[in-house]
Amino acid sequence: MTLAAPLSAPEAFPALDPALKILTAEGCVQCNKCTFSCPVHRVDVTFSPRKVILQAYLGGGDAVSERDLWACLTCGECQAVCPTEVPYPAFIRAKREQLRPTMERAAPCKHGGFKEVVARIMARPGLKQDRRAWIGDGLKVADKGDVVYFTGCLPYLDGIFSYCDSASIGRAAIRLMNAAGIVPVVADAERCCGHDSLWNGDAETYRKLVEANAAWIKKTGAKRLVTTCAECFSMLKHEYPKVTGDLGVEVLHFSELLEELVASGKVRLTKPVDLQVTYQDPCRLGRHAKEYDAPRAVLKAIPGVKFVEMDRVRENSMCCGVGAYSTCDAQTKFMQQERLEEAASKAETLVTACPHCRIHFSCYIDGRPVDPLPELKIVDLTVLAAQALE
Amino acid sequence: MTFDPAIAAFCCNWCGYSAADQAGSAKLEYPSGVRIVRLMCTGMMDPYYVLRAFERGYDGVLVVGCHLGSCHYKSGNEQARDQMGRVAPMLRALGLGEARVHLTAASAAEGPIFAAETNAFVERVRRLGPNPLREAAR
Image 1 (cartoon, each protein chain N blue to C red):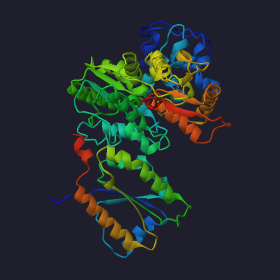
Image 2 (image 1 turned 90 degrees about the vertical axis):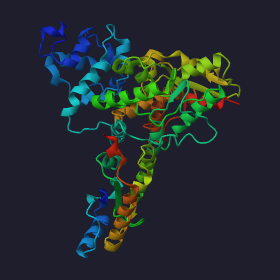
Image 3 (image 1 turned 90 degrees about the horizontal axis):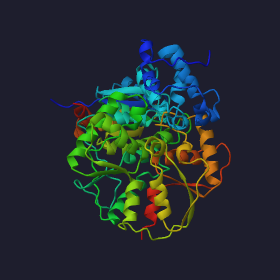
Image 4 (image 1 turned 180 degrees about the vertical axis):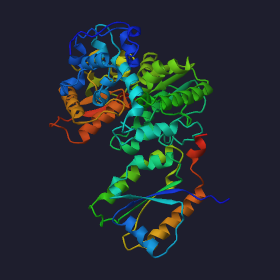
């Protein structure tokens, strides 16, 4: 195999893999930067995005192996360092969509497929959910209002990930909004955002979920939509408009709203939280949605918090090791060990702005770390900010 | 027309399934809508099986294992109990409710208990009505 990949336009190769059309626009120059930035390559040297692209060019559609297809975390590190900005995650997404029907095992989900089956059930148009039981007393939510709080899969996570109390993130968000005089809309009509369906190649379910969500969001008449989840945020802000056009709402990650509320004095974070913290950039919030500053501004606004950056941050941030629940194996554990060691060398608390990063890291700490880890707590940004409320 | 619930009954090889077998040899009756799936141990009950059964349109899911302390694999039935605890909040959120799932135990000699438990569960599901997900798909 030579290194010289054919870089002609796809029209010159009528039989060329359609997923490659995403790539040819920019054109891979085979420089291999992607490989050396790839978190999977760090733990498994046989995995190389450059090689996958070359194989796809030379061998047509079938040349990408199932293992290469599902080993990718779609974290976007390769695209961030690529001199021609080849959208490798988008290529993998198209490829998964293409190959999914031919796969022997339908569910690549590493939790036995429960997230996929829940997403498929939620795609049913007439579904009547009862998904607000976690809110509890003392918190105000409404059916109509200016701000929608999109909870994402928080109500579904706690059954399986019982070590993580994910619903506490939602309660903290509502508490902070209530403190600023906002009574958010939390709807039973809400569905899964479709993140995992889209990234795992289930386009049909994704389309149904997007349509169902767009319909209820429009019905609320809200002006803004806020979510505490980095995945929901990147979907609603950047992917939904491609399917439904304008949603009619301004989509915000909770850190963006909180930054604004703190700056305008509507939320006063006054109670000191004496912690040394560091921050994990979630790939969906950072590289996918380009929001790096708001979470840091919130951390700096919490009194008593001493914020220390890790070495690999922002565009170069390391992934938590799992993308869309489709990759989790021995190699993942080495990635998590490396990242958590880095975090533990800077602070005693690792803050993240994505409930899924929190689950994956907590799972690792809760289970059997590859090597002994120093004491480290994984805390969601929203929960930490709510601790600073009087 | 009376509603005849379709029930997916996951039975372990050593107790639940043998109890069902015994109920059959003793000519004890239980409704024909109960479809038995044999597992080696209820310890392999995954939240996925429960959700998938409801997705496929079953009206209830019954899990029959060994009595606590007498699992053929020592603790499989305890794992089953934990797994059913994990799936319960999801069923509630999906609007299915927890009452459509039942975990019970019947030893290999307890055919009558298997028949009685099955009859009682089918009656409970009949009162709850059909699986709402079937309607939701339209």
